[in-house]
Length: 125
Image (cartoon, rainbow, N blue to C red; front, side, top):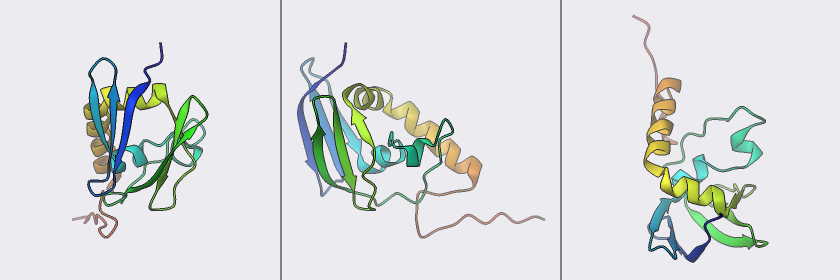
């Protein structure tokens, strides 16, 4: 059964989306987390996800319903093509810690960083 939030709030200052559910569950999803886990083809690729990096300061500018099944999130870096279904949002919320840790490990393995103004240089000694 799909979990539908009973309350959705965009906090622009803290760059966070809060989802509340009838069960009493409440989740705070940072814009950066949502951006790097966007369900769009740009991020998910076509069966091979494309690692997003340099998104530490990204924010959400708009949250709109997409029919009865999803939210369309608009990010301040111009990304707005992913539709976050209710089920996908709930999975992101309940798995946030594991997904974030996996993302950080992928960044490290790829020699990338969350900071858009920083690049990792590997010295061959």
